[in-house]
Image 1 (cartoon, rainbow, N blue to C red):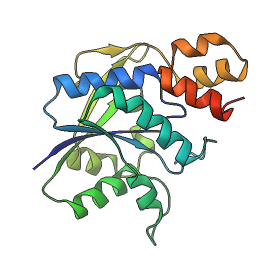
Image 2 (cartoon, rainbow, N blue to C red):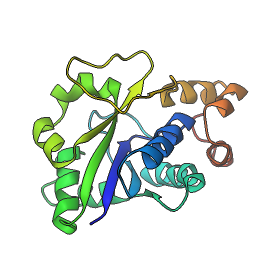
Image 3 (cartoon, rainbow, N blue to C red):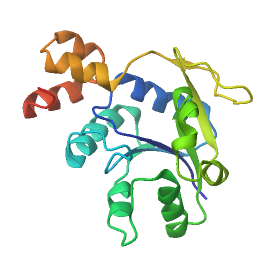
Length: 191
């Protein structure tokens, strides 16, 4: 049995707070691996860099974290299913459990996400299949009864990084892993 923390998101682009969350989970939680799982199609139809570009940036962000950090293409596989409707985490976890039922999954989410669970497909069932590891996020108090890992990550957002990149502001480099900054510059992303 492998205990896997699933860290999903747009990763548009992956930033240093994503790395901090991943390192924190790898070092403090009862898991064997952490998988970055970039969404293939955003469930709320937000515009994203291509899946391949975001996957490549996640690989660059995961590399410094060592061999227990992986990047998964499973969202792409999910999107190829004949009954695919939207990128839903419940469907993703069901697919993973069907492929390797001996694995145990945990879902890495930020405290901000707990306010949106009513929008998630079959949230209660998902929480049973992959119990959440809730990471505190500055500015987002936890709802009553929620448990968290005990740490709050800095207020860094991909939205802000994209704004700075679009403006050509060098401050964007302070929010992103060095290799991700290089990748974005080489490909002219977010301009």
